[in-house]
Image (tube, rainbow, N blue to C red; front, side, top):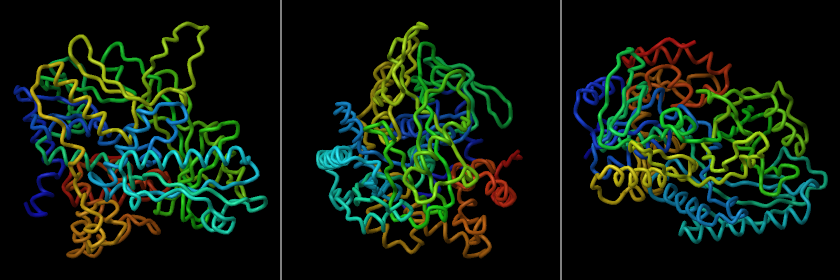
Amino acid sequence: MSRTEAVRDSSLNAGRRTRELDGATDGTVADVLVVGLGATGAGAALDAAARGLDVVAVDAHDLAFGTSRWSSKLIHGGLRYLASAQFDVAHESAVERGVLMTRTAPHLVAAQPFVLPLTPLVSRAQASLAWAGFRAGDMLRLAARTPRQVLPAPRRLSVTEARHLAPSVRTDGLRGGLLSWDGRVSDDARLVTALARTAAAHGARVLTRVRVLQLTGTGARIRDELTGEEGEIRARAVINATGVWAGDLVEGIRIRPSRGTHLVLRSERLGALPAGLHLPIPGETNRFVLVLPQGDGRVYVGLTDEPVDGPVPDVPEVPETDIGFLLDVLGSVLDTPVRRDEVVGAFAGLRPLLDMSGHDGPGDTPARTSDISRRHAVLTSPDGVTTIVGGKLTTYRRMAQDAVDAAAEARGLPVRPSPTAALPLVGAAALERLRALPAPRRLVRRYGTEAPAVQALAEPDPALAEPVLPGHPVTRAELLWAARHEGALDASDLLDRRTRIGVVPEDRAEALAVAAEVLERAGSTAHSEP
């Protein structure tokens, strides 16, 4: 199959959505209906389609609309779970990290260095504990058979090396640092987009803006959010992969959402950062605030772990208490503390933690959300709906595999074993091939083997090579590609998920007009944006 044919088969756009929604609601019965198109839902759609099943996957909003776009962009090796003796969770995380980095998405997931500066706030006992943890993390890498050239070994840093890698950290009393490595996805929402497109290439019907009004073990009553028309999707098996909203569709699912907040700073505020930073949280032995350079002129600082009570919002708000907490931890190690007015954006995601505590009474004291296990669980309702909850971004593939296995068993579907551990996502290739592509490295890190095709959009029209915003690397060609091939239907899809322009409200407002122009050019069913 040629590159052009591969792109066409995996392309998601407004026209394909209309055709496939009509087919999904015409009374025929699909093998599997997946509800939710975050990482787990898109992964389940891919897993089922790759096994040869007829799949329909829907989301009330867009790809990666919920939790999956608000992560720290880290593909963790499971180090923190060793401290709580969750060896199976730690090993699973390390294995899945290796799968992403070496086989399924090496264009999107690469090694990220981190420095733990040994400031006076870090005691020698804490430093020894952290070093032992980093060494244990390297043993996890070895157990998962991830090559050393993919994830380098941790090592101690001299004072000079620590100053170079962490130039904004105050130097008085600095004793050097500890260098460690973990996985990092260039963009979590882009990972979800790649999953959805790969599922589409295997025949899955991937339908955004389709809201489930009622869910049963044999299908769903749905509403097209673009037209208001209602219909029915019938299926032999149903997977509920809606994360923190899972209990809204299936009774008896108890979720304890945990809010993880990140701050957005301009890169110049912290200067050149060759590595990310681990900053210990005072009073905690196994939790850190992370400073994560993004390579697009921004730096993320996060994250919190706070319980969320009451109704679950579509987009969580960031409270000032979270911002103050992160600024306090950041300020404890910087030469010059970051002021509140230097925070140009903030975002929060909700972790879908499964509540197994049984604490219901007013006198009960539930566990901290930071202490709740990140194990995932697959639950089957009395009427046959399979719900997948818990887990984390790193382990989405295993979660999807387990969900499809459970759904197939519950509904009597004969399926072959999952092939996804060795199935490259759209754009994936061996590192040698990726390095040889005739395209800028930034595009390769986002689009993989499709980077030359994205760049080629600007050949007949040089204006498409212009950045959407002055000083920001995203070009108009990338927005056009998103509308033609990545299922973007409106400006919010373009600015908030296919790119990350929208995490800074000022930048988002400035880019809206360009996004509207690109959507009109693409012929997409664009809708006005507030």
